[in-house]
Amino acid sequence: MASSIRRGLFAALAGFTIFICLCYTGLALVISYVTEDMLIDHLLKREAAAMTVHFRQHGVLKQPADELIHAYADVDALPPVARAQVAAGHERAEIATGTGQHYHLRTLDLPGGQRIYLLADVQPLLVVSKLFQDVGGLLTAIALGLIAAALLLAYLLSRRLVAPLQVLAQEVRSQAPTGPVAFSGRHRRDEIGYLAQKLSTTVSELHATLNREHAFTRDISHELRTPLTVMRNTLHQAASRPLEAQETALLQSGLDEMASTIDVLFALARAQHIAEELVDLRGCIEESLLRLLDDTDRLQLHLPERLQVLGNRQLVMLLMNNCLGNALFHGGAGARLRLSFADGVLSVENSLDPARAGAMQGFQHGQHLLRRIADAMRWDLGFHAGAAAYRVDITPLRAH
Image (cartoon, rainbow, N blue to C red):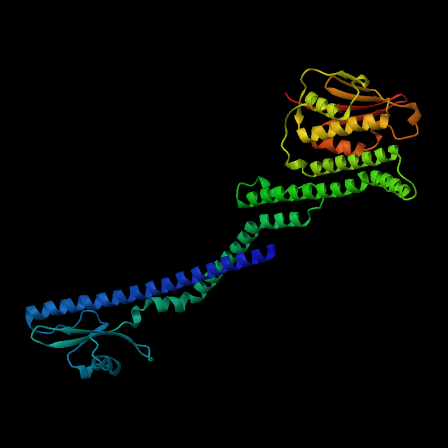
């Protein structure tokens, strides 16, 4: 498409150039011939005025002073071509013949009703025709050279004007689906720069949308497989015997985990459209603990009275609910929970039940999802597994 634009622009510039050249050439010819005719007419007019003055003063007809002009008192004495013009009623005429003569005819009415005819053979005065005969080849060569130069300039201008568009089109064509978006023309201060900026923004947003869609699809497959498998196995056993209370609780826990996971995934899919704000992290922690924890004797809380961080309240609540929910569930019924904040790091630690040593402990399940939540808010996460406890360190983005 870019090359067709260049061809179209070159054709327009070339056509306009040739049109201007032809117009100016025609205008120059018209001006030359008009000037030549005006000069000859002025000579006849001046000769007619002189003959009229002489006739009034002396009463006799004076012959023209210019040897190219002849005065005829009788129309029959005129050359046939001139006589035909007079017979047609023309008082002034320009007559070209095929024998080399070129006449200018002018009728003069003298006092007393006498009419004479001034006929000038102006062939020696036709400078324009003589000029084209002598140097017409040179003038034609110069004109063709100027047209060629103008066409070359039009070609160079078309290349120069369309080159930024070609570069932009090539960059768009070679843009990788997951590569960085950086068009070279975005710093230009013209329409191409504006177009490059808009394209860059649009492609970046499209890449981000596609990445979120791929991440959502991947996370749905990864995070929901485990609880679905547990629930499917439990329900399979229910076909042969009634479910025990522990198995019912496991099903309920799986449903709660799936609901929480889906909430997180949808929030992450919309993360780029969620505004960043000041959030009271301690308030979010307390709200999550009130919902998840019944026995406060298992809890140790070492937090400042107010803990302002930069993030999104919905994502912060999802992060806290998942961290604390995992800690309480995987740590076992007797697990103790300790939350502390020091040096800008929030530490969430749960003790491990030795009887559940073979099971998944603490935060090992769902780490990828927790990292996705933290990355969406530009927070850092660190996981530390020990023999008697499991700890996650959360480094939130602090307000300055």
